[in-house]
Length: 285
Image 1 (cartoon, rainbow, N blue to C red):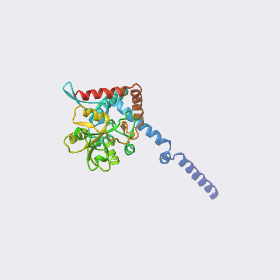
Image 2: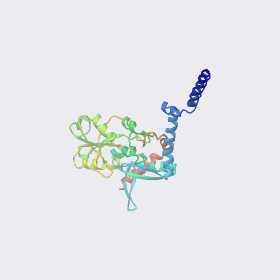
Image 3: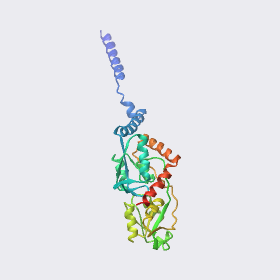
Image 4: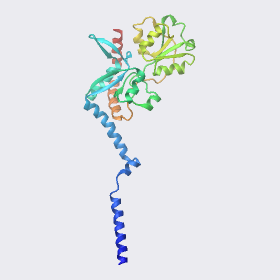
């Protein structure tokens, strides 16, 4: 009988092992990070675009003091945010079939608002620098502008080289590419960063700074209404400082949808037309 008992015990043990193997949880696949994570990420990014469509609106963050990109303008006795960046944002919303909501804030706070989920994307003449690309994702470049130095008209002959600004105060928008340009290309100058271009222009007019680095279309927009300011002959090293749209990391479907809109606007020259019309709005102020 002991022999039969031993055999029975062996069979029971074997049955328990087989049963355990058959009912093992599927957690192993998740732990090894196999294909499940990719599908989960795809579902997450897909749900971002679907969420926007279900909400019926997309929220853009911008810093509306940067004509002709984005700026405030009174239209029919109502303050509105206009500019060619805003027109691009409207086209994106239209292609997605949703309404556009605009949130105006300081430039240096835009990416924080994006990462916090307070806005769906950022369009504000923003350059996709390596540092920013580590924090957020970007679309393709939709517009590239040349960097220029603005000075008071009376100082045009005085400040005509980078060396002539040694020891002088040079303004730049805080957190923008221009601040980096002053630090790297004008090491002998003292950079004065402020959040708003309009404030920097006023600082220049009031002789609190001696020069200001801005993009050419921005400079031209302000100079039409400030004849006491001019573009200096100072030559800055050319950089690939084009503008792109920022979105939260991992939103590849949203980036793809935006790139499709940008492709259309670039190919049919709509962006060039938007820039010209935005400059006309600035001049009409």
